[in-house]
Image (cartoon, rainbow, N blue to C red; front, side, top):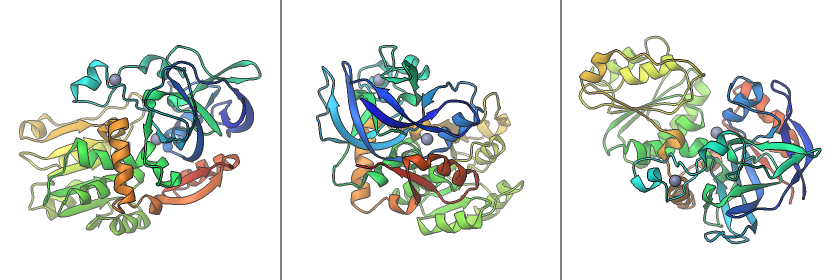
Length: 369
Ligand SMILES: [Zn+2]
Ligand SMILES: [Zn+2]
């Protein structure tokens, strides 16, 4: 079929909205009609050419929500009409990692996904008769996409796709990190570095877990104020003495839990040092530039601080995303407030510009029906 999609043709150039060919789903695959898609920093990072593992041409986009339009042979858990959220982090339920219950890093389709192809090593996308690759296994800056069944979370159809698409990446990364990865305890003190969608998610998750003090650290007053509206109890501007500022406000020992959501390695270091001596747990969520290193003074670890990371906040997509959608329907996740701009697919480059200007939290693309 012919579909409209935002194609990354050349790194550093605006995405090109074009008509491309999409082949029908093969065994274990599903055709999804996209209803909404968030514009995430990772899309921009790849489009800019800064990511050395990026490839082109490809169709970008990975924060999608939509409806199942067709299922390929062998698909058992999804049917036409089901509402789904796309997962760049699949959950096969059968690999050694999925079975362990200890991680969300599913091994089933990693290799081909990293190369921009579907699990059988081919693409369903074509442009002028040539192979067009699938970004992050999702390619959701498009009217339709074909994805493996194991990379789609079936969610409550009552939820608005404009909100649930945020759970395909940014919002879940922060919320799940607090709920499932760090398992923030009631009454605890939490510090979140960075008030973008991921950091705001961590604030919301910490609040849901009953944290008593939730500090947000961000240089933007607008963002700090926003974080306080969704659950942060106190705000700090941050800077070189951020750790000292936090120690001064937490009886000199630091916070029970810290979350880093900036991708800046010096802030990751601050998040480690602001975690409490004895048991403080630092969760690193931001993606640092290739080759960058995080330096930690070993004494910080010897004296009981722990450091962990969590791609997608440690969420197991098919298990946890439906639960988060239910929490949203119960009024417990302010996803609608995170949507700052709405644009048609044609204006996807606008979404990038808004992000570069730090204007708003999230741009959501909507698709003509
Ligand atoms: Zn993302
Ligand atoms: Zn797996």
